[in-house]
Image 1 (cartoon, helix red, strand yellow):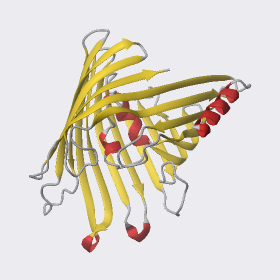
Image 2 (cartoon, one colour):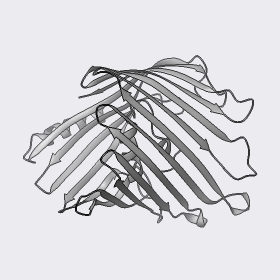
Image 3 (cartoon, helix red, strand yellow):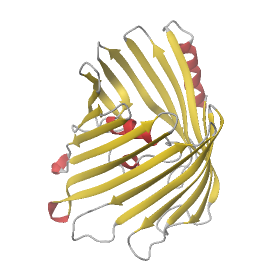
Length: 328
């Protein structure tokens, strides 16, 4: 706690110095949860319930000059059943961005391309991560260098390429790296097509390839929906030097029915190994909830998740949450 306090004080003091404009902000996800049913292989048991912070952000955005900006972000994760019973705080983002005419160069600890687009259209990271984040196909952050920009006169096509350590928030410990590439094309004013590909080399040729294609539609202030297909391959990781090939599909939607209320739902399908000789290893997950906006910066979100396993004899996971999401 002392380290967190000192870090926050440092950010505050920096914000008072002459760095041009500085914006301080934050957000929090706080739940009351109840496990109605639980797979016996999971650490959290049936009927377990309680309060939890799943995420707390503290962010400082510095506009250093017309072309140069920087971000410092701290994240605190609440206690989880698999790890320490104490809150853990760490550096989430720390990068500098230099803008060109139609592009930007980013250097440092930063977000990775596969997360931002789908998370934006899903709209409820406060309730659940997107599928690629849940399944560990790629980390949400990496240390490296990236360039992102737009193409064409109408700027209807955007690109994002990145070269990183493939160590998430950790220090680099080997010579292997990950290359990311993303193309977004605005098909119409409401419809976006997205393609993500990334590749990481590894020792003993156990390389990792991930690809995802998504279509997302949004009518601002009314509704949005989207669907994506995810392919994940880890080479030579199974007996006989066989590849582990996984397949995921996700579809979601949300609609606003008044200034204060919205509904949302999502279904995910995941096949951990779609080799024809491997059976009963798939899962299907349903999410649904209601978003009540008590204030422009506060949402109260009752929601439920249901995870069904293909393998017989394994209980489903059913968890209800009352989620509070606020910005400050």
